[in-house]
Image (cartoon, rainbow, N blue to C red; front, side):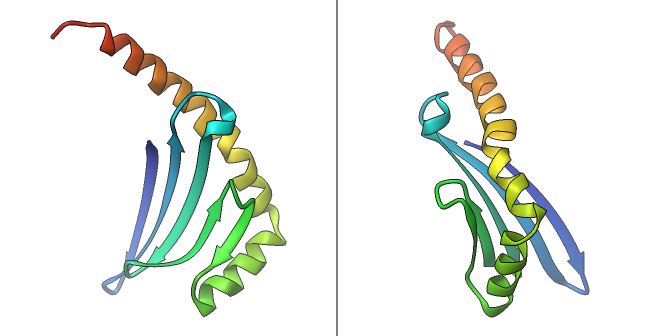
Length: 104
């Protein structure tokens, strides 16, 4: 699994985003990309490549999901599975296969 975290703070409140690639092979169909946004540890909106759109979990998240789904964000997130996950998963799988044959 690959993931990327961005954290921003203001007056003690935390806002962060986690992008994650879950996979069980290097085939594109076996990869799921998720992008989750949190505020003070509460997830309020998520994009999932298996759903293909943003889904809100709070009132604020629902408003953001609607805005993201009608803007360029959803197009960029739909492409992230291939541009971000697929490219990096291939590198990770190859590295793991190389390491698995080595004696320690």
